[in-house]
Image (tube, rainbow, N blue to C red):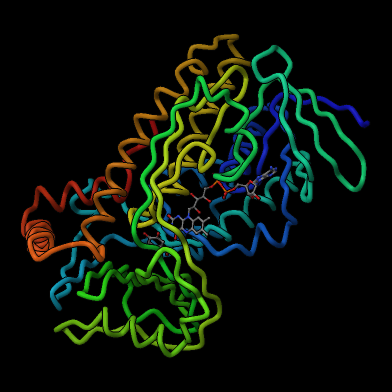
Length: 394
Ligand code: FAD
Ligand code: DHB
């Protein structure tokens, strides 16, 4: 058994764990990041792509903003398509100049791994059988195997940044943990295509066949999603069928259509709303998907993870610098306020833009009226915009 110690043991090297590691490093706080997967797998996972203003600002503050500034695509607005028409929403004008930036999550992770290596702080990929112990005592432990050796890491605190299927949340006794959950009757089929984006902003579209979303990754790569059934078999979706369905769902009177091209990657994402309360137990603090999941329609998952670790690093800094633990004690309560705001918005965006099989003619008319109100009312557009670009981290 190899024994070592650190101030903060971080489980998971997704956006939450890597951002936290860098924030702590900048405050001179020591951490070890343990990641189950291999480096290439972590970097190559294609996931979210929309960064809120607060996440972009945070990336700059921690020294991870260079490539983001060069390659990230700032969007001041977006389009909503329904009943064959596209409507533009000028988000930045409605949300005090705040905007979103399109930059792939895998690029964020790549930049953060590079920063960690530059900092020279430990980041272990391929850590097996990670388990956490004594989180309700003064000296929690993380045990794991690396390169065939057993390790035990003594920590002051453990940050559970290990995503929805991790080991940290289950370490909170079920008598303490409350789970709030909703599973949606649809999923997203997402593709990455070798095709120049044919519009410089996102297009969220509702058609009688269901939802479709146009996004991008670079001047040469388009990212597209379409609503499908939750248990959908990817094998049933040939490239031709995917393009035909996307083109149908995006049909609109102004003639806009996405460019087609070779499909480089495809996958299915389930849709779920999930909140675990509280986000802390003893010396264990959950951040990101370990604590909450949102359906992707509002593009909030990655951004919520960033807001969590921003708050956690500030609380840990106060603890180490000033010896105060009030920010640590209020970590969960403050985080849940933001989480539930994002949950409400993501749930609303999802219901407003998807067609469940069970809806009836009344539901359809009501949904049309909701969208019609949205694009005609400055108040409604402002509400959408301020939620979509994200409120400042608090
Ligand atoms: P993750 O990114 O999940 O990172 C957790 C890390 O912990 C992983 O690297 C994992 O390997 C590691 N880990 C897990 N268990 C252990 C263990 N026992 N020991 C050590 N390490 C462990 N959001 C959007 O807004 N739009 C999208 O289109 C979108 N698409 C998505 C597609 C998929 C398939 C998934 C899963 C998520 C998607 N999301 C999307 C959500 C978004 O990607 C997440 O909210 C974001 O990744 C959260 O970051 P995180 O660091 O909390 O968790
Ligand atoms: C992307 C993902 C989202 O979930 C979303 O709401 C908008 C864009 C994307 O991958 O680009």
